[in-house]
Amino acid sequence: MQEFDIVIRNGMIVDGARNPRWKGDIGIRDGVITRMGKIANPRARRVIDADGLVVAPGFIDLHTHYDAQVFWDPYLSTSGFHGVTSVVLGNCGFGFAPMAPELRDRAMKSMTKVEAIPLVTLETALPWDWTSYPEYLDSMDRAPKSLNVLPYVGLNPLMIAAMGFEDAKSGRMPTEAEHAEMARLLHEAMDAGACGFSAQCLGTPGQPQAGTVGGAAQNDFDGTPFPTDVMWPETRMRMAEVLGERGEGFIALSMGLTPPPEWEALAAASGAPILWQAVVPSGDEMGAGIRRHLLDWFTSCHERGLRIYGQGITQDPPLIFTFDYFDLWSDWNAFVGPDVPREQKLANFADPAVREKLRALPLKYMFIDAIPDTRLHRSFSEQWKSCEGQRLGEIAETTGRHVIDVVCDIVLADGLRTIFETRQFDTTLAGVKELLDNPYIIPGLSDGGAHLKYLTCGSYGTELIADYVREHKLISLEEAHWRLSSLPAFCAGFRDRGTLREGAAADIIVYDYGKLAYTFPEFVQDLPGDEYRATNRGSGYRYVLVNGELTIEDDKPTNVHSGALLRNGRVRRQPAKAA
Image 1 (cartoon, rainbow, N blue to C red):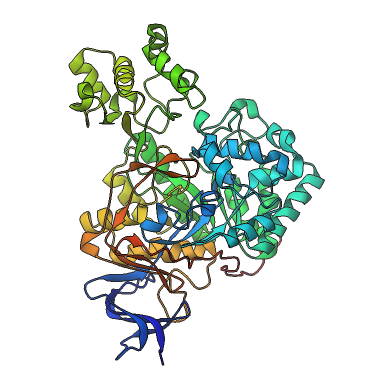
Image 2: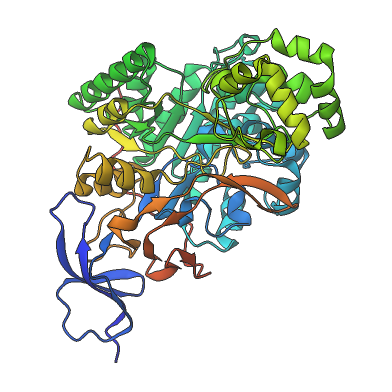
């Protein structure tokens, strides 16, 4: 008789709890780790020889947007190919529930704009067999999954459900009845299995006309801020009080560059972990000053019993883009943006009058490299192929052209197929070290499932170990796995995940430390509706187990769908005391 389903033998175990690594065996039965230590003569359906390999808990990604992708991609790629075994979706206040049928089209257009998910993909793949949040979770539960998923309630659809679409976007203060309805809907969602709430708050309360900190890139498809961008602090507090009443859940907020005073009040009222999204490793003086202020603030909060954490960008992600879909230089959208037909784009690039207007626009846009520092990654024409890898400013100087004319000429020669490369952050090694030196920073903000036309950051765990543990030695392997698994598990309220121990769920990665690597992003045509996206792959992952079943073997999917909707994977706390 078999004692185990799977035994992992002779692996170098890094348990995620910051204990020193040790060599041993792990026995798994019915999706649970049932024995750790030395297992002599194991009786198992499968014995994995992990000699020379690291055995660690799967990564837990707290910031994804797989709200739609979960319905067509069981591996939630790129996350599923980079050691991630559990994800939290529903970030930034976005989501598809609760959702009245007449608002579905607007919801899909919003996600097409802000997250660059093709509209035809959403129209093709979303089953829309729900209106309420519990029904949405039931639908998600039915979808095949090779990772575990845990959803936030996005406050945008919640506010719209309680106030109506126009009023929610107007910036007016909700009535007492509307606040009560929001609280009821949040209770209903958490009763069904949601883990808390999220919001993007990048505008000015009550002032939709003021725009957002993120600029046009973070606006709704109609150019206006989202409801949560103009929501009042009182609304966030009322939602935090729901978590305080329940004694469970956590909160994720994106609120610009510096924390408003209300954060500490939210933490006290909710009793919940709150995630600041995000802290960046930029090397410029202003960025470094903001980062250090935040890091000091996290430390101060914890000294006072307030569990506020930062999600740190611990990678230097390239953005690759084409003008087939383009939304990064906002002033260009009228000429070559996503809503401009292909033939008109080509005509505009060739039109001297349009070029003159483009030359008069800024050369630098928020959060990305200046246009002259953007690189030509790939050209499809012989004329420009020799310039691949060069900055556009260098090409302009060499050819005696204005940099805008260089862009237009290359794109015309390639018929819009040109692939450009830019960077989102001025990442420095010193900046990453400052992040990792702070114990309240959770590495990675993958945005998995979002920005599909130009960004892929689901490889953050692979990059942390390969670049900052193995190459630069900024932190130990034990510390890295605690940050990638145990700390996010604590914040998410998982009872039985994030560490390797007897009785824990068998979400396990087995990898070759010396060969762990990631590829440069590339475009693949694999979305529903025959659309393309940016993605990358990891290598060195010999085995990945989710709930005790092998989902990855030798970097390849096994097409085993052992992931689950984690409705009940939360630690219940004592309700927060009333002030």
